Length: 238
Image (cartoon, rainbow, N blue to C red; front, side, top):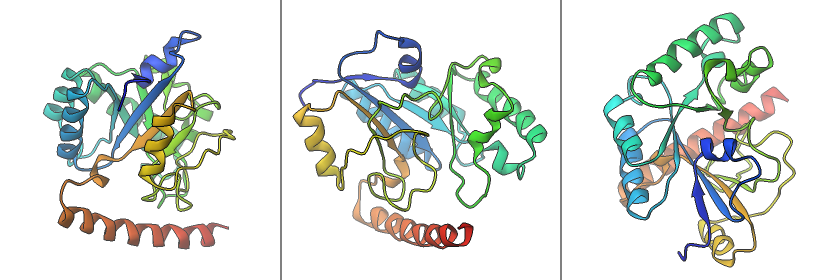
């Protein structure tokens, strides 16, 4: 791809003010699982001079300090993929204490300036609602991947195994009216190549992008089952 866009991290986007590049791509990776896959993608991005933001959940399979530090050394930004409100079943007091405890785990191993909620669609609680009661800036942070995103951003996410899929329940920028369509990855590539859009905010899940057919097929089946479950949840919650 001819370099027509500047790649920026979430930290850079939030703190840039009116000095944002005219054309830019804000690349975000949510590490729900498979940190090794995230490391592989981070290495590829480094090779092509791409800097992205990697948000890690705090659990025994995903929070791997060595991998987090390796990715940060490549020039990528590290953030906290928080889910404390869903973990505490909506208990605000417990959620904020857990948030601070988990945030400190990141501060002990890397630099951290931004956070991003984990969708946790099986829970009825939206983790972003924690900030209706508290201010994340009081924890030395500058931004939240959804709440700090401008409504003028063109947001594309692979949640639901499609770009802005109908099975996506929470992965969107609140209040945004942007509706540029990319049904396939080829469509997204064409949008980038045409340079008609000034910005792209792309959210990816590294575990979804496999390098061999067997692993890709297994994850496709998992996504299919999960998306079917989300459709049922949507009907029940209505």
